Image 1 (spheres, rainbow, N blue to C red):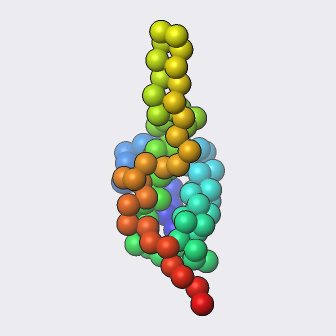
Image 2: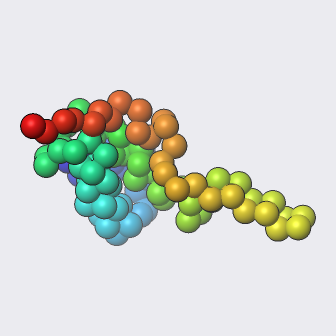
Length: 92
């Protein structure tokens, strides 16, 4: 799974170490759930980095926000650019 150093080198985000360390196991478990696997292969590191970066850079699931008449839209999943390439594996 992705490490703090790999994340820092890939994104250049250096000042959010505690948040990144807290998000790594959460994202790892989410990938395991999506793909129906027990261990996350190294091929999915880029997806994990994108998912962590998405969590750090977005407001609590907002997809859009307006001021006039206050309208807010929420997302209930990661965008496709984060999850593209994750494949669900069947277990027999």
